[in-house]
Length: 112
Figure (cartoon, rainbow, N blue to C red):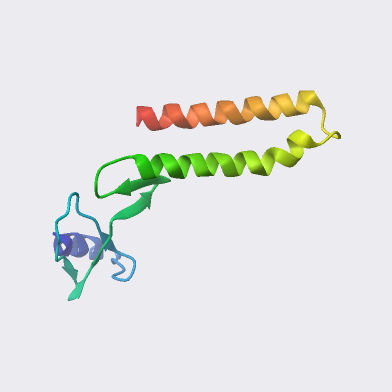
C-alpha cells in the first residue's frame, strides 16, 4: 500500500519521510506497515488541518481542542475589552469581524 505511493512520488521527485510518517487504524487493531524496511509508528490521534482525529472515531477531543483555542483567543483579546483607551465602536467592530470570520470558516468546513 505504501510502496506504490512511494514509487509514484519518486517519479515526480518526491519522497516519504519515514521519521515523520505515522499510521492510524480505526478501532483497536494493530497494523504492521513498513516503509523502506522501517515499521511506521501507529498513533491514536493526530491533527489534520486543525481538526483532531482519533482512532475511536469520536469527536470529543476535537471539540475540547476547539474550545481551548476559542478560550485562548478570548484571553488574548481580554486586554482590549478591558481597555478604556479603545472605543466601544472599535471593540464592536472587532467582535463583529471575529464572529464573521469564525462563521465563514464554519461554512467553508461544512461545505467541504
